[in-house]
Image (cartoon, rainbow, N blue to C red):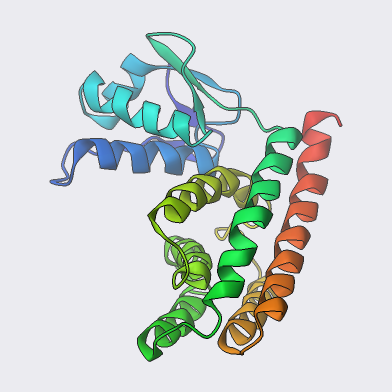
Length: 232
């Protein structure tokens, strides 16, 4: 069974790269899930996936276990896996936890940034509107990480990266950087510029509220988008 999506191409081989096989396989499967090449609810053969990626079953299984822990993949059988379905309850849980963990960290980070960290936050804001979709998407991800970086400890990092990765497959449906107008790119930039400006000010409560409103707006847009897909 070929592993591909409508209009999205196939899962790409990683055999020629010198990087860690497990890291590369994880990144490629994750990309395929986010772009819809591996569609929500789709079951696929681990053997077929290994052939397309050009690697053995060992890194495939380890990568799938990583992605299962992030809520992207289900591993019910030894020889097959499936993409976790879209679920409004999962979406609600992801954002509920983001509010609990992310908001206080962002608030505590206010006033703690070094000049280099402040400059980096500005650079990430600019990267988030890059014309290259992959640069823009990574810039957006890293921007949210930078908002909490001064106050986050290793456990915060683990929890937040799990939540952000789980949230990405939902946000990618609505905020896909590969299909964006000039006006929409400007709108997204402006919403994040507001967060940047508040992050640079000396008002933790304002930071928490600005990020809460930002996340709530995103959650509501995603909910409106996937509810018809789920028949809810």
